[in-house]
Image: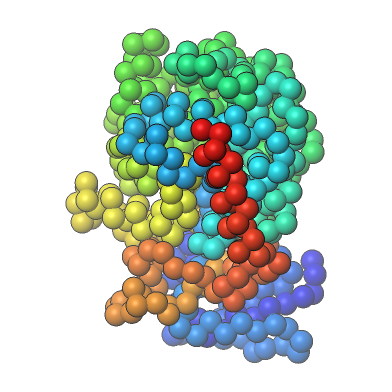
Length: 462
């Protein structure tokens, strides 16, 4: 480990990310300082500066773990607010936006631009770990999408999990789909996953790079007979499984009509439940579904803003969490969540469950846990998600310098209760990836111009 050290001093509050009563570091009694040495947190408490170490003054700021985003579609970062899909539910929106516009992602530069834009938005909301459900793969693809997203993550210093998606059958509802949505063969999909594992996967508890096997959906993207081989191969490789499940009422009806059971029962029949599996959405769950997910330790990536935006419903995330299940937060793709940052997601989580379930439906502390330690637990990154000596130094310094944060009787809860804000500093694996509100080496003006130019190309083609 490097001897390079950094001292954060005088924080108004330090949130550890731990569940329950232990989530807050007692600043008044123990001190609001935290030392990072190399990639790890070395000490917390009242600390004395060491010669030559960098000091960051966190006076009037909350220090918290970096957010862990467990489900995203980074390529959608250039597909925000497309008029044809604004007022559609999931199935119509899929055809009008992601399926239709995938034709534009036919070269390396546009994929890298979209990934960079998405990760910049996340970083500036304090997100340090991104699990990208990248399903844009097709036969004859002229560039390496996996290499592109890993490169962009490394350049920004983000902890990155590639959920290598795709499909091995075509969706019947797609009319005149572009070549970029053609399915792969099962053999090609499995070979591509294994190739990415050998190139990128690190099983360490503080890994900066992970690979997951993640067909887009178990019901429509692969034939039933492919589910078990995909699961078996992932477990042979020692990697996790991820997909979408139970996102809409239509999803439940389809699975009942075609397979005679709930989606959760369906995936269980084919080896797709367990502590090495997590699903995005899980909006529509019966009591027995919920109990089965909790009992098998199968994880949830809770995406409330996307579910609200598409009119899909509100997932029973608090119930699964309180039943002992693994629940995390995620922003989903920017095409269905035009504010794809984790501070927005946490605030929406806190609000929407209280709106539908009552004032005691969820606490701010539970939201913070889901978005940090809960996400790390879902991804199997045991050294990430909490602020304790020995843990990876993934942390956020959030100044309470905006009017929305003033007047709070409990300033420590500003990251959840007050919503959007700009961190002054973000560290990932001990590296300062946001410094004084900006990303070192990144020209935001140039990034905006590139994004606007890419959108114009798509609009002109449409």
